[in-house]
Amino acid sequence: MTGEMGDGGPERELSELVELLRSLIRIKSVNPPGDEILAARHLEQVFSEEGIRATVVEPFPGRGSIVARVHGDGSGGDPLLLLSHLDVVPAEPKGWRHDPFGGDLADGYVWGRGAVDMKSMVAMEVQVMRRLARAARDAGRSPATDPIPGLRRDVVFCSTADEEAGGWHGAGWLVDKHPEWLRAAGALNEAGGIAITYAGTRFYPIQVAEKGFAVYTIHVKGRSGHGSVPTEDNAAVLAAQVVMRLAEPGPTRLTEAITASFSRALPHLPAAAQAALNGLASAAPARIEATLRDLCDPVLARTLSAVIRDTVSVGIVKAGLKYNIIPGSAEIVIDCRTLPGTDEPSMRKELGRRIGPDLLSRVEIELQQVGPAVQAPLDSPLYLLLEDVIASRDPDGVPLPFLAPFATDAKHLARIGVPTYGFSPLRVGPGDGLLELMHGEDERVSVQALAFGLPALWDAVTRFCGSPAAA
Ligand SMILES: [Zn+2]
Image (cartoon, rainbow, N blue to C red; front, top):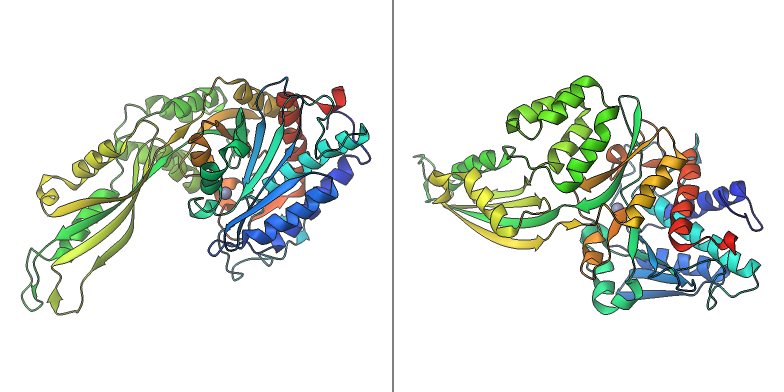
């Protein structure tokens, strides 16, 4: 780490970070039901030991979020927000090598649900706050009230409930009720800055954008009858045809983030991958799928396929009451993920194109939920600084902007104009990546990856907000 170590040192800070992460994993904040309040109270205690003032909110029973702030003198501009979420997705212990809620430290890894998504980042952010508070105390100031010498902006920590289920009981509620707590020049959040090794090069995708979503119910109209005489009006059969057509990969479109990402990656790729990327915009969808499968492992191929097009995933198909009754109606629920620039009417139009005129007359498409894609600027000082932090901490690594195919709390922050970047830096080896481990079995993070991440996050915060050591 740059700057002074206060009363600790990198070793002590790292072991504090590891212990904090282990304690967070042991708090079972599984959503549903959430119970994030337990994690929020735990962090409140950690902050109080450092003299940092924190506010815990619990707008719905058990659904706790926490906000804390340390002060700069304001000369650098608006605050920096360190954003994260406290909830995790469920985990069945069967299939895991370690208890998913045990927080084991074994073979150089911290094991458990949330190790990657995203209690490691929560812990790194807390550790940065701790260190800022210690700098205040070293200078004879109170971290609760006084500006920290050398810090030119406030640093706000916010860890939320409910991100894994849309965030409406966490970040969504905070943005609606207490936007002033969260207003910032920019936010650092999950799902970026985590190394992906491809063809021997470590790439660090930094999330600058994320796809939007639109959920539809498609009502299929047939005609019921007796099962002894099959008909072409069987709604289950019609629904099956609709499902097959929806599942075909649609046309591709390269958005700003992906174009920038590919051009940054290009010089570091083998010739075959270069040729494929260059031809991506013009190739036929089926050909693109085949090329991605040839060039990448299946997880990466699927991810790339999802970030270059609007996707349709069939989630629920329902038809029929009894084996000998021909269903008169069927229902299909689909999850569409939209690129920046695709609005709801154009998504609906694409559904119509895929379903085709012959079947379109048999269906009614009903919108259930919609949320726009978000995009943060690629040329902001904060983004450029994040790339530079990665480049200086891993000179062989290649930072690049990226569009996430999934949604995060960045959506809620976008509603109050806070640009959010996915930057939870971890230098992980092949096989330990976000794409493999997120929401999967044996979720784990290496202590080595954390030893890279904490100083990288510290660099990002102090280069943007001012270094307390400079006082
Ligand atoms: Zn997450």
